[in-house]
Image (tube, rainbow, N blue to C red; front, side, top):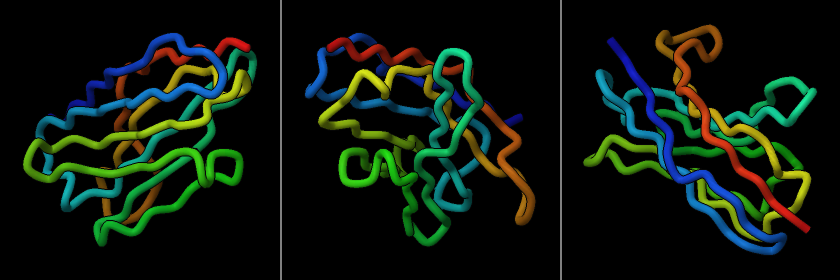
Length: 118
């Protein structure tokens, strides 16, 4: 059974940084597509960054240049480094993984809260 466990959320002032981590159990991330999503209060869950099998990365426009997704194949973790945080980055952040070769993200972590104050 595949399990994702996020950590590293918290509260920070605007302009600050946080680093989120997602520990993946039951599957090698080097052979998986993984991503970070976020859901702000009253809004839908949106993809913000993903990392492919190849290591190629993609970013949602609003975080491009500020956030960096990476993975540690030895520790089997996926990280999200968030710099220059803004109040609009306040959301619950979720780690996700695609269990199949096609289709969407179907395995999710429990989420971790990030709050950015102005």
